[in-house]
Length: 223
Length: 223
Image (cartoon, rainbow over all chains, first blue to last red; front, side, top):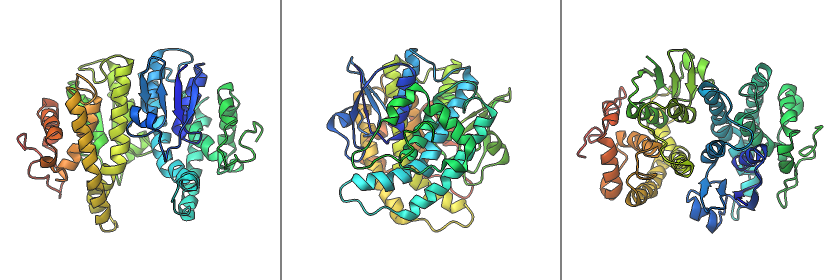
């Protein structure tokens, strides 16, 4: 079986786990800590970035960008870049929205301050001003999710796509930390409820980081 | 003719200009300032991120990730993701190396401190400690370019690919600023000399930012 080197709260690892599950492709998970990548990970991906898929053939597919396209090119299971070239470009625009803009403004600061600094030896105390600023920046992103979800069945169009998985991957990592105030945005909540209820999401809802329990409603489908 | 909204020193805009030129596809350039995106840009890409291609049909293809794949899917001109699925994954791994890791560690801090702060009204003075730290981080990246160029004809394999264009896009923006000390790494220099001499590079060598002349050797093929 193929192996996926991942970290439970890494949004990019989460997206690829969701993609594999939506496509019905089983994988063995290998835990990594992003602040102390294993020798095996660095040998395959010198950047140390997650996730990395090791195929049974020995081939290594490194990074969320390469993996998202690679799994699609394999042509097995549900297509996650459905539609024509323009529709696919819209999906990729939104994936970049979450993987670049949302990550820079929200996920990276929250995960660095709350998770990495907790576990990485010799870290400074969390910068609470940075945490508060990131939480402020989460609100307009949830508004954008709601705006998209009101126009379309799913974020990029009429079908579930990588755009939904990218958004859910980032947002679910913050939801694990208890940082999403769902009562503030019921349209975004309803989109998240739909994606959280999918069978492909189930494994993520069982996740736990040793020493850091998930928020009370993290695994609750009726949150 | 299609229009490309771009900024001369934005590495992502530069990569797409190079891609279009390698594929032999003419485009009209529309200048943008990343710190003050135009109304047209924001209407098409609310993230304000560059580049954005406006097709004659009215379709907008937004962002370097979507554009790199879209131009390839059109199937016209030189393929820039050549090879089988594993070879393509290697190209995309290296594109992410430059677009994510190199950008975070080197391009973003240098361009923010030296360019954005120079032109954006109300900016603080450049943070010279940040500039120096980024220049230090450039060295191992040039070593990595040299290591790849020693094993292979081009960075990702035997053919020119998006990986070379991504690397050259970032490095050429720094070269404009005079921030690449080529005498320190002759193997990386020889790779850059090869790509800089390609006809597709010519338009970039004529670039200039008003009020900020390029370094003396920027346009020199015999630097």
